[in-house]
Length: 473
Image (tube, rainbow, N blue to C red; front, side):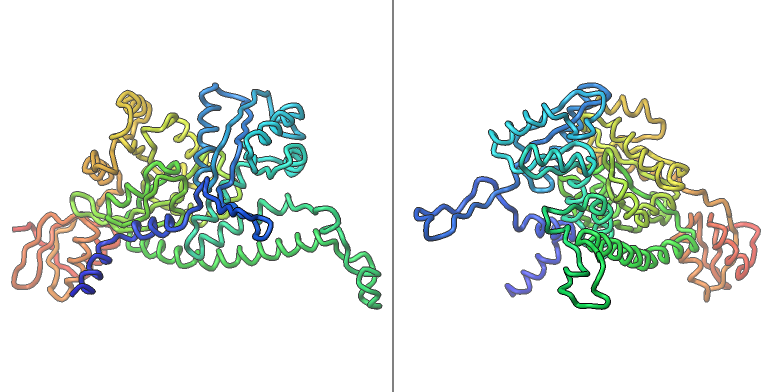
């Protein structure tokens, strides 16, 4: 009896809750260490998070914009599992081509790193290979840029086989131009005397170690592209099947952590993982939903966007982002409680511009987190965005109005039929209920009199098997 009760409790747990529990099951905690009195006999060990200092260059915009950008970098660093110790912003016309912040400021940064005990510096921008190398030589700790940080988060959160392959491809694209040797380790050559005097076939300069690594990376990238192309075939097949049946498609897009997965769960009960973290979910989820009038449509949750989303990720996730371009309607979710919601909207639309066809799809701006947002901010966004609606995915406020708005914006059912359909073709009656808008149904001796608005393909099938009637009794 007890065992049966345990199974019942497990069945009540949603998929997203299980994913969240798994993600939080093992975390490194700052400040914990194993210290032994006699460290001469046993190796001293310490367990802690990476301790990081953030650095940004303010080149344009207001001081508030620069602060918001560094605050977002802080959230990214914490999502990756780091402990942020300090954040610095330098005002410059453009980043220094050698060290990103200039040699003098780099020396000041070194002193801050030493005094705070940091082991990593994260720069708020994409640095050239030379900038990374020279800044590391000055500050004497690891230096990474914003792109590498985002790629690391994607690598942590990717779960599906396709998602992992897409992230690995993006990481290799980023790594290839930044591959460099350390001392003589990657500069040795194979061939000639270095090959041990093996004779014919072993002479000559051969390949340096770094050249060999670059070739292997290119070969791995080519293999990953083939794998991703093969894995995207299944999604394309499903998408084409939905298009053949003419089921309208809705895509949820928007800034990371704006509440896209929460909205999908609220509308469909999908049970997708929800976490207050950036890029919590990466794999697209497609679910079925119905309008208030009962019309069937599909709704897809897509990967979140962010300011200066690395172009490597846009390229690697192109097959996933095609869900946006192929949709009939985009629900553009924005966090109404964020300090800069207008900046979020602009950043997402910048990514839309890189996806062929996405800018042409009609869009509804869904201003989420109304329960936590300032009403004045909500009014300001609603006035700026013509097609917008205020909702709270957590409390359900505004969701019924959103569903009605979706029904208005979906492709219209412009074929009205008044037909007597034989009983043996009940499958067409069922499709009319699922895919169309049934106005009335009347069962008579010869069959079912159907009065409905349907899509063109279903209308053709009904006309072929049904008999016209003058009116529906």
